[in-house]
Length: 114
Length: 111
Image 1 (spheres, rainbow over the protein chains, first blue to last red):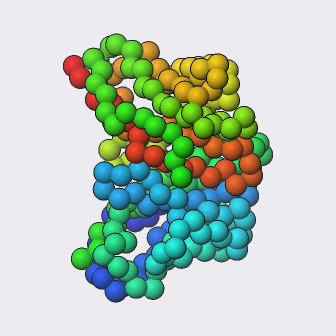
Image 2 (spheres, chains in turn brown, cyan):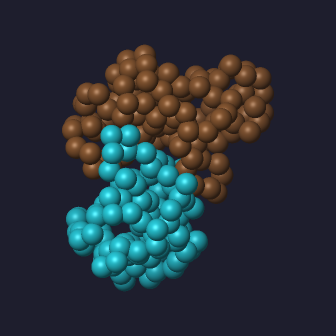
């Protein structure tokens, strides 16, 4: 069966520090991968998606970047965090064997910027 | 861009059916309706999806109106563990499979 892992579960970082959040998927090959951010009390905002290694599309202009160095690995990064980067970050994957596919989410990383 | 409208909150008595409405009046012929739920501080959980026929699985039933402009998610016997935010999403079936979440409906199941 397929599994998705995100870490860390919680993170507290000072303003101006770098960030690296990692997401890995097991049990499937060539998945679509997604990064979302959720502000407190709000819905999910799609940040990035990837349809393959090295292929990243950004949905909104922001202080963050994403990379996909391996088929099963999706990384969210920042060189200098801003207070507005606080939130709940979620990674998701979907298969590509059928066009109609649900997305499956990880447990998320709660990021607090001080 | 969310293309759906949902009530911000609903209450339901434990053991009763919970009927969660969603309006998607601008839905296109090739767009599917998906439902997810998010229990506090967890990732969203997929529930069900459909195109135009009613669908049922072990979690819920999805009723889509004939004109496809609205749908209802039915939890037949709500439990306290069903308390969550429920999201209705419409999306085109393509290889990018992007989802745009709205604000959802907070379902409060009460004893």
